[in-house]
Image (cartoon, rainbow, N blue to C red; front, side, top):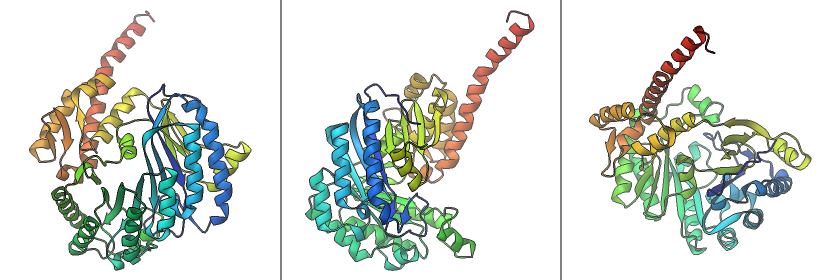
Length: 411
């Protein structure tokens, strides 16, 4: 089943999932596969077919971001990526200044490939750098060395890719505050335009989870909190603006594609496990490479899930996602879009402010502080509970009136 609705001209993002990897890292829970290179050509055919099939429903939507994620897109090959981008530009209304990103691991990103991708139209690269300490890379089975990471950044600059992001992880096995500081300083010396700094999560079913279950000790929550707060302060000193819990950028270089997720703007995903939010529906494709290929090429079922999103649920998402960002939330956006009372939310935000977890900007927007970001799950959960109580309190008189009418025989 395919979605046939459109979003009436609103700007659109396109995400293309490349599920192939040279090897799996011990912490990785994304849908990615090692040793499946023999499927790449068939997968390319399926992606091209799916892009063609979907294009008519997005004919009125200018595309301002395109993102190739993974997996490891550069392991898939520059030629295939260039062919896919060419098809996207032919089939969709891609704006001239669109942000077009590909993810890469340093071991699969040489100068020749990076130059080919830049010439094909890619203008942003995100490297999985993760750590500048060899032992930490080895501890989670990263497929590259620190030297390869440095070389990939140099090759990207030589290829004239002028919007470069590095991913870093804190909380790795054996990591200390000292080694984390070394990683951050090393990354800053490479002068990226953007940094994504993630706390390590032990995902069920991964090799790392098995190791932890067998007794391996990782940096605890307090140690990770110290790493996060030091990093947020250090990046601010270096001129990077924090625009989301884990993301920092020089002015003008925030990831436009990732921002659309947090700002509830529409996007369409292609490939197994890819998600979409388009035409008032959220849907995803199954986590099955062969199922996706055969579903597209032979007409089988692709959908893993689909939901119509009511406005009250969008209101929950507005709070949950907006408070992940430095832009935060604002009373009249909330009232105007979702017709819900902001007063109980603001009252609780005032409590958070007293604890140093939230602040109100001069423009009247509420946002979490770096310390608030550390406990954002608890804070946002608290606000969502209050929002639900407000909704139920507003609904109760209507239900009672309806019940009385029924008792009196008027309905």
